[in-house]
Image (tube, rainbow, N blue to C red; front, side, top):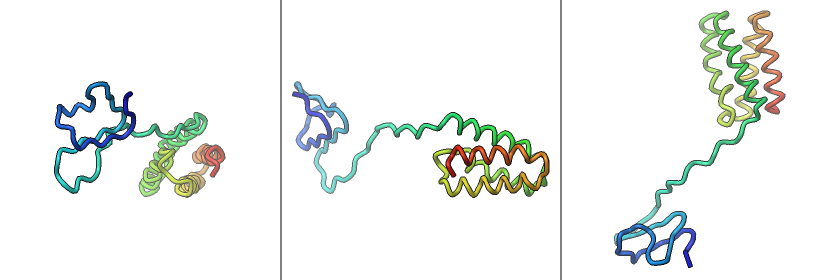
Amino acid sequence: MPRLGRVLDESHHGDGIGMGGDSYHFGNVVTVHGGSHNTGTVNHAPAPDPRPVDPALQEAIDELIELLRDLRTHVAPATAQRIDASLPAVSSVPAATPAERRSTLEAVAGIAATAGAIGDPVISTVRSLMELAGI
């Protein structure tokens, strides 16, 4: 019967392939050839898939990024730099914490409010995004 799971084989002197006879090893296989204080393993498993993003939320994020790119052309260079600095927290759904995202969205809404009518679509999109994200 095949052995499944993690295997520690300290006596294997063969080819190191991880299967012999009618034994097949699935998952992490560790073969130790002598030595002492052998600690740790290297796991070559793929990283888990990132959390799925709600399509409506992603659409709102994409729209806000586009609006912010347009807004930055109508504001002072220092303000444009603040908009640029906000983009990573706006665009990375799983990476930014809700508190970081809320703070960033409030900051860009404040910038948009000082820009006059050109900032109105940004403010509207920030409201929608905050509602969709539940923040």
